Image (cartoon, rainbow, N blue to C red):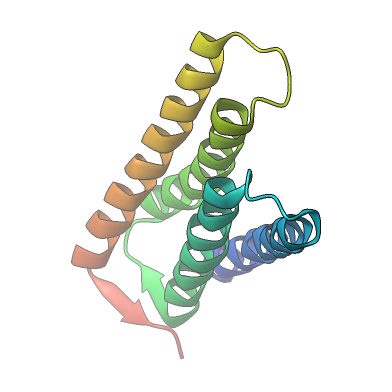
Length: 132
């Protein structure tokens, strides 16, 4: 993945999360129900804000280790999707899904996201060149 592509990929996914989060917020306001409040909050904080912040990081800096950067970007996206989808399945229970499955889905998504945060932290302590 080309360095600037990290930034673009994260930016595009953050925009999708922003749209979904705003839609959920307007749905909750219109319906007068706060069933989606934790999902809505995490979609906006993890999906929109965090991915956007990481997009800016990759726009400003060239990572020293491209493998760690690639793993970070894709684990961030997978983790944000997994955490929020798992949270939706666990709290909202939209389908008649086994509770163990929804719990594991939620935990795996959150764990992948946690790994992406660890990879980002490692990345920030490695040599970084400012993009010009």
